[in-house]
Amino acid sequence: MARTLTGAARRGTGRGRSGGRWRAAALVLPLAAFVGTAFVAPLATMLVRSVHDPTVADALPETLALLRAWDGSSLPGEEVFAAAARELVRAREQRTIGQIATRVNRVESGLRSVITRSTRQLQDAEPESWQAAMAAANPAWEEPGTWRALQRAGQRWTLRHYLNAVDRERGADGRVVRQPEDQRIYLRLFARTLLVSLAVTALCLLLGYPLAYLIAHATPRRAALLLAGGLLARRAAPPWCWRAYCCRSGPRCWYAPRRGSCCCRPRA
Image (tube, rainbow, N blue to C red):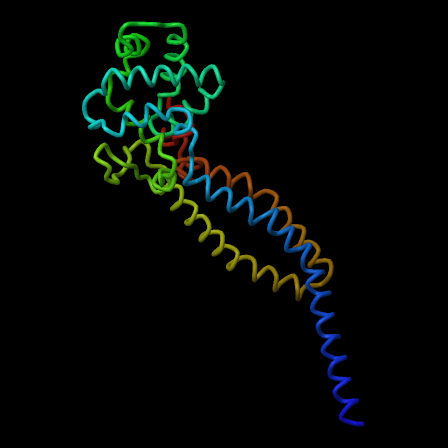
């Protein structure tokens, strides 16, 4: 009899624990759904879009297929010019030419206006030579670099954005090279951000802990004054931090504007 009661009690305890687990899971499920919808899904979408961009490939399939056999150094043939003209004009009629021009402009600056203006001039044209017509619309079509940029922008999967983040790009031969000097900004910004973060951390250690110690051991009146001073300093600090972050010369601009060394003010 005792054994029977013990077995029944164990089964009842097991059912109770199982029911508790299901109730806990039911309570956690809304939070998990919120985290997945608000954080995980947007991050996953951003990561996929950072390496996948099919806009140009979907709009210019024939042109990109012909460019696969191109050597990349000389101008492509007449069939490539004709295919590019047809597909660009069709993209303008479908109102997607702006997206294409933006993607190509990310590869080679200045090509957005080349594509949009040329497409506008070629819309009603029926020339004997599309190469001559596109060259007449804009001389940039006679440069192999324009076609290389169009070819690179047509890659569905690319690490171009990550290379830009470290001031790198792919050269004409496909190798990873450094960007021109006037375009190397990201590594400099990363270093400046790290330096500012370390400086802020050090200031917090040097000023924050002693101030907190004084507030904890001060009289109520003095503690209120110290706390108010800390809050005022907190409100006044962000504008100076933003100025240090946005100015290329940093604190040098604050103390030496009259010597003409500040990059943010016009020199006399």
